[in-house]
Length: 608
Image (tube, rainbow, N blue to C red; front, side, top):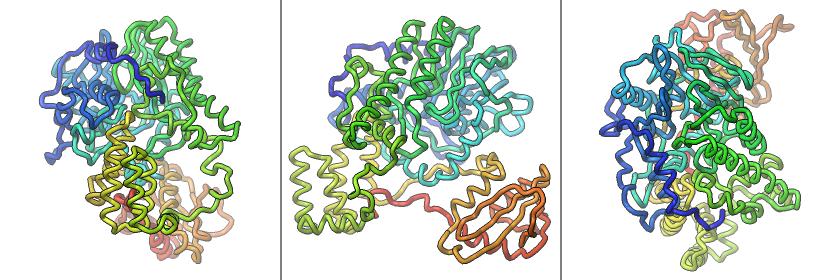
């Protein structure tokens, strides 16, 4: 992105971020039942100072805005709690109680946010729950606002496909995503001017208990209207934008528009650095354009699940139009350059935003970046391979690194050259050389310290929050090794929300294929919940499954069980203790489970 920054004299964002302030949580520290701190907004008090040399001034400004904390009035009858998690929780007052939108990541922070609202607005019951989309920071705290048993009779609204996408993302590739998310949000970094100052989209993620209450009302089409506790809502379905299942919606009686996470005060990710399915920037822009037209004239304020609202109909139109153009330009120019034969890295170096967008604070790359987003668009269309045959069958990192070190003249020579590049200001190539040396000689402490120093400098100069956190967490890991707590995204309630086919898929992706190559077995599951029969086949190291009405051949083992019993079985309980009916050879189950592996939640990233 252009080095020309917007004007720091424009304080509109600060005025909007402070507008409608009702009261703050004091102290702004949220703890779990065992006393463990799961979120501490007071740790960001240092942001009140001027920007130090260890931070990009634009990211420092964004961090100051994101650290605002408290209960805010958006418009009459609509309130937001901001600064108690990465995301916002919105509360809409109805006839009898409140409709909660996006109950944060953790039950503890959601409960604290609800308590803050009630302290100022009264002890109103939760009479509705809305998930704007399928990412964990928008549903994980559900039990904090609706404890077990309290959801009876309370409608839970979500876009079509929400449940499948919400749980599959956290299960199939959840271990790797969670590990990388610790880098992306700087979860294990201290909160300090030279360390974690924010994540661009918010300050950081909470580390409490994740929960999920399944939706009871699906939003299946744009124009669908629902009334919850007397509150009228008009929906716009936006699948494939910021999330696979997402929606915007209007409160016509409040003249307020919720933009979910489709339009926030930064450039968002087309491919998040923690890893995800590549998003469609073309569709994203198209749905923003549709929102401009579809909701025109029916609102006076727009708010989202992150950041602060925008007031004034014309201001919202200008904001949405800019966001639309941002994703459309990113998509189309990447395709233009791609079709001229440029590769992902080449496009990332070439592409620039139009001056009007580059000078708009809401288009800056605090969370996504023009550099890695253009690579994501390239990946969506052409994949990882750039067409150069030399890149088709390269050595893996360690073997490649050893050869580079040898070609460069050995470890001492490559270390000296890397330091020279660093002194000259070419930190990018210094990092490349030192990375090769660390992978070739992971025991080389001088190389690791030199690389950590380069990462410090790259992080302190980054305008993008996740880039900063990745660099600084990499430096921390090089110096101190792998450490830190991991958020459990596969807790029993999350796993319980999976369908039976998805549960089996979650086992299939953990089969140790080479060990299972020579085995051949079939297990039938007869589900008492609905009477269906599902056949599991392990063959050539692959576990596949399908629904069968009348099997042509008998299975080696048939289990008659409910979904609840299946969950117990997958958790390690025995068939007898669970009361599961068995027919055939029970040893087949033991054989099958013997091939199921357990992922390492703390695998190394910047060392072999």
